[in-house]
Image 1 (cartoon, rainbow, N blue to C red):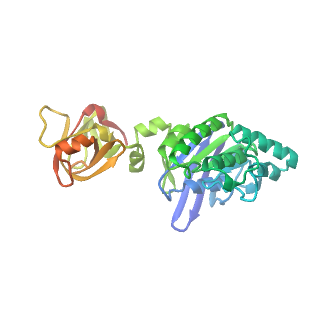
Image 2 (cartoon, one colour):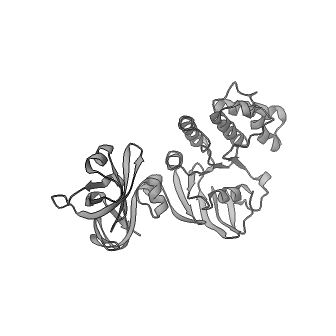
Image 3 (cartoon, one colour):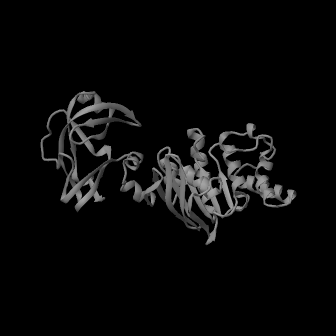
Length: 342
């Protein structure tokens, strides 16, 4: 288990957070650029000194141990393979640095290359490898030292979409077999959801939300997380099912009291050119601020009393004449509007 309080102070930036990762657990650090995610990895690896705080690995102080003596394996975003060494010798480099005899280190390297599916590529130099192959060599190099802590900094970021899918599945298998603590930094919510047991969201050097991927996705607590998982998010005050926002009241599925978050997906918003018949629980008039392609749908950005995103079909855009500046009515079912304590 890795645990500690990490404080790193720089000009105009301060990282101050507590982190705990159990043996066999994979934790993904998510957050916008400059939030401090990579700073956490560098501090754990010993590449960046703590300004204050402590780090313990299996109960033993780690922050006082030099980087080269820490039982840590690290996979960098650009892999940092040695260009003059073969794949085999790149992987053998770690065990050799830990005092393993050359012959045994090369045997271990061969075993790890086979485990990551690169048997037959032992002699290949980094420039002869594809992006996916280079990533697997970097992973094998990190695991060959039998680390108690594995750190991965955007390990899939440099891969194309097809290779990313394949390597993500392989990485998931290897992380499942790893019995130490693993910390992953990523900007991709899908990578985090697939690879991690728990998410830790970092903004401005502090933890703002953490929990199981499904829990974080279902109940975001910051605008960044809401955008990440594709939800509209608001803060309001609840009195039963009614939630008062600035200038408008929404009805939610849950009954709450006091400060709450309110969230709903863009797909839950229906648009009309005239006020719809019936009595939808949530209805407001809006002005279209923008229209853009979003996957298989078209995302309509709404301004007005409730600024929101709505996902509609391309056919609906044409049929309703949805364009910037047009006035529409937005309807939202209370059953798809969720409120939870702030």
